[in-house]
Amino acid sequence: MAGKKSASRSRAPWYKNGLRFECTQCGACCSGEPGFVWVDEDEISGMAAAMNLSIDQFESKFIRRVGAQKSLMEYPDGDCILLDPENRTCLVYQARPVQCRTWPFWDSTLESKTAWKETCEECPGAGNGKLYSLAEIEVQRKEKSV
Ligand code: SF4
Ligand code: SF4
Image (cartoon, rainbow, N blue to C red; front, side, top):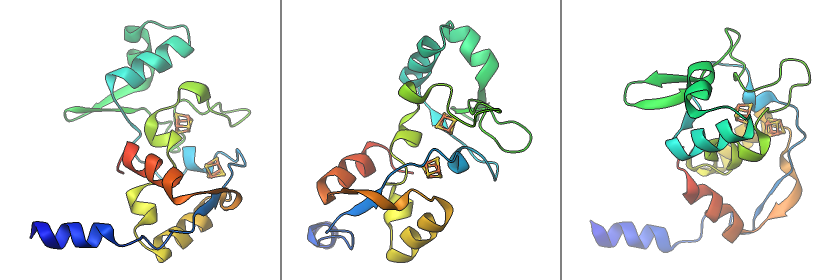
């Protein structure tokens, strides 16, 4: 079992030559279908500081508990609570959670060429712009598995 696992890991992934990504700031990944942006205590602390709020103030305005985990709240239409409704930009961009910072290089989007193609259809920045090397992609993919 262990040998089988390491053999598959040693094969170069399908994106070995890198992938392109450059965010157009369209805001699509911060809105749409309801979902979860998981956050930990360090991320909450960083976002609170970025908004000049105490951790308690930030949590009461923007955080919901989901079982043992915490996620950002959403507006009823599915927009992230931290997406500025007028200019459609992130209110905590420099301190945004790892889940947001590592998009679109997640386990789920890199699982197969088909998954990446679907990602490119959802996200106009994926597949365009700056070429990320395999090493750069892997750093982001391993930072948070989604
Ligand atoms: S959907 Fe893609 S291009 Fe649009 S804001 Fe999100 S990451 Fe950027
Ligand atoms: S925290 Fe910012 S980048 Fe992340 S989903 Fe919300 S608005 Fe988008």
